[in-house]
Length: 155
Image (cartoon, rainbow, N blue to C red; front, side, top):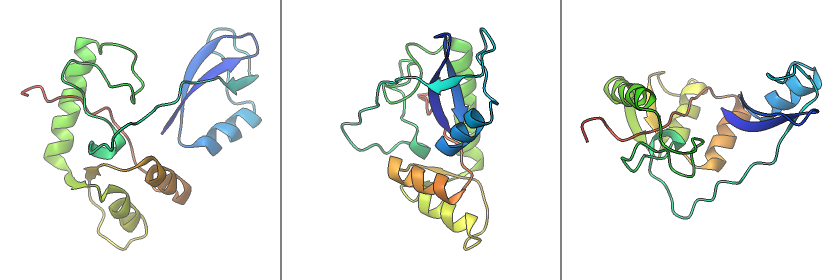
C-alpha cells in the first residue's frame, strides 16, 4: 500500500491509501476521489516530506520497529505518540503475525514473488524488504501488506 497526502481544488488536505501509484492515477483520472470536507473531485497529490533512511533496516515487511516509546519512527506515517488503544491493537497484531506466519527475514520479497508465481507453496510469511523490492512486488502485482511493527507488549 502507498500513502499519499492529497489536496482538493479548495486547498483541503487529507490522506489516501492506494495499492500503488497507478491505482491513484486511475482513480483520480476517473473522478473517483473526493475531498471528505467539501466533496470536490479535483484531487491531486500534495507535497510530502520524503522519508530519509540513514542505515539499513532489518524490520519485518518494510515496517520499522518502534523504539518502545509507542511512537512509529520517522520512516513511518504516524506523527507523534500512538494512542494506547491503537498501540495495544498493533501489539496484538504483531503477536498474531509472529504466531501464525513464518519469518523469512530479508528474503521476504523473493519468497512472496516465488509464491505469486506458484514456484513455492502459499503460506503466511513476514520479513523485510527494501523500497526497490517493494516497487518490484507492486509492479508484478504481488499482494502484500505492510504493518507498523511496534515493540512487543512483553518487551
